[in-house]
Image 1 (cartoon, rainbow, N blue to C red):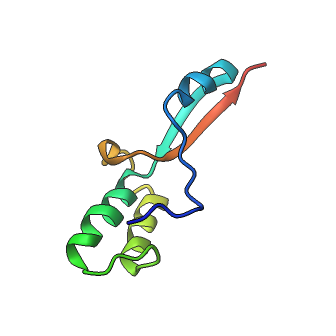
Image 2: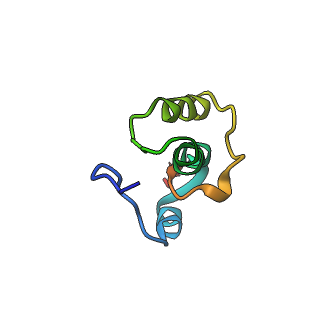
Image 3: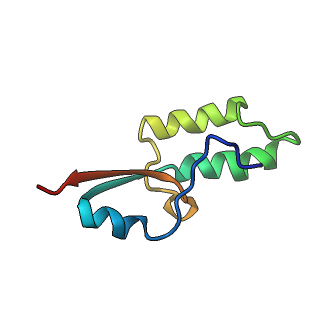
Amino acid sequence: MEVVPYNKLFGYGLEDNLKKHGEILDFIGFGEYLYGSRVVHPLLFNHVKHDAPINKIYADLHRNNVTRRNFSDCDYVGVYVVKKNG
């Protein structure tokens, strides 16, 4: 699947930079969504699309915390929760 323009990926070192400005409280990854949309989806269907119904299923699993952290080894994207210093 091609990288789409709305995906903005940060390089390594982001955590070190965040720690300079606050305390990292949590990291909410998207491993289960990435696994479903990048591994399961292509195995089941010949044509892979970002807006495919199976991707919505994995997005809903993530949103409802059904599989949170179970696929952290598949994760390369997420949201940091940071408490600002001061």
